[in-house]
Image 1 (spheres, rainbow, N blue to C red):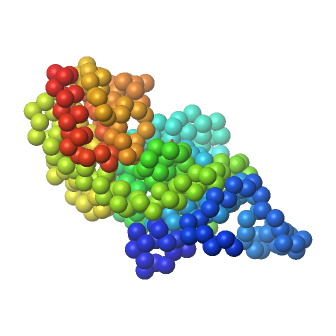
Image 2: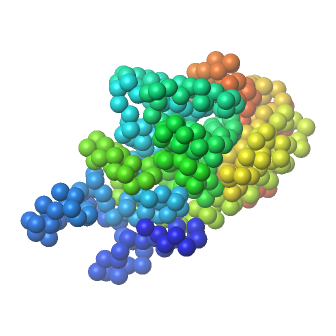
Image 3: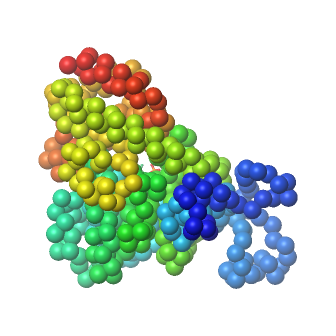
Length: 393
Ligand SMILES: *Cc1c(COP(=O)(O)O)cnc(C)c1O
């Protein structure tokens, strides 16, 4: 566990696994499925949980431990576990705490697969949920039932970029003795620390800004020791373990998270301000623009505005599609949080199965473009956006 007095950047770099006998400066990859026991007594004590140590990579591995120890230091969490994907993290962070007959309260705008877990998978085991409109905070308390166990939210939401007040949610969860689970993937620990506002569990798809270079798929669940013990039990016996290679990459990624997020955010703020002034642009949404309806809340709970912004071109769905086809440099792909700027059109791709009304509820207008702002020079990003805006008119 990191020294609490250290700053974010230092914890991200200096939280390290012990050196091996080779005295390496940078941690090697522990590509091994199991670890040898010193003797029969040590093996017995490890299996009895009397002493800690690596037994088998499905349970733990030095690379994944280094990665998760760093992430815990950055989120202010006591303990955590790395998983093979963000969705494995979402699933075990919920499944470890609910049983048949329980109920989950969730914000309506959730990542697509999390929505599928709540609506298609958990009901098979008799676990129900209620969605609450992110814009109707008074509804949250009304929908808490005697069997409610957890509140699950994402803030900022995807792709609506609406915010939920984490301090208020933390108090609500405490008052009703519910577990507050926050998917902090969009913000990253550099920008927002839900645990400091009262969240019990923080989940991540580390595939996005934490990897930051589009190389791996991974996830993490963080929280208090006694909660993570439950999650580790489920993970040990169901097997969503991260590979040591990915743990090694992701630990390296955390070393540059602060500088990368500073640049993602400064590029995003500059682009958002620039787009807002263009006559062809109907509207722009970005938490750190004064025009964002929850700008004050953004300033309160977020260090910076994040790497994602959305804008609406005049001309609706056809204009949006023409615009995407006219891009020359920017990527048109389903990921986000990469060094490369990525454009998506939610109405015709990720959210195409929803009706117009359902899309409107989560803030997706027909011509909405989501931009995951990368680390290219901001003038080059502007040039490509500008030529595509002109070509699509
Ligand atoms: C991508 C994403 C996930 C899923 O993560 P994977 O690593 O793709 O499994 C979950 N939540 C949010 C907010 C995401 O953006």
